[in-house]
Length: 179
Image 1 (tube, rainbow, N blue to C red):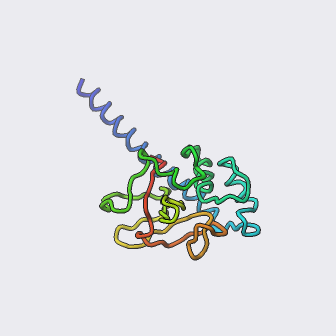
Image 2: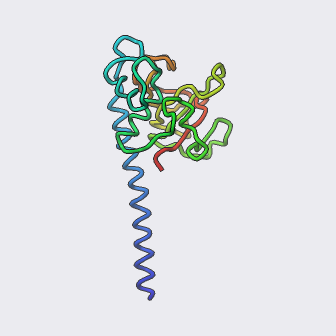
Image 3: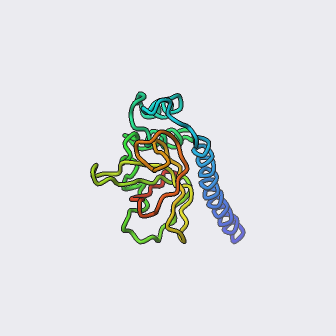
């Protein structure tokens, strides 16, 4: 009987380890997908171009619409991760069940690679831009991100997919859609 308990305990530990390893592996795959899009640019600066069209199609929109949320959705869909209803809207990514941190919370959480970050715009009175957390270093004031529909200055009305260095103070919320 003790042998069976030891076997089942060992089996459960192995299963938990593979589940955690699987989430880490999936995060690496998602990161490879969004990193592969860095450098994509709009064709004419009007939310258009072949890749932008593909991102927008993932949320059933045509060219011409803002596409940061569509970019996040498209990347996740490449890995069979279902985004929220209304994924084209940046604020849709921050459901109660998925949000792991909001500005003002103690920074006792661990943002993971491939989590979604959001930036709040007072004029909109909501989160108005999203992208991926690439690296959240607790010893730094900077977050490395990959985001669509931005530019070198970090605008939410940009022209492409960029890897950015943003101040943590710019980030309003982080959501986990992988674990």
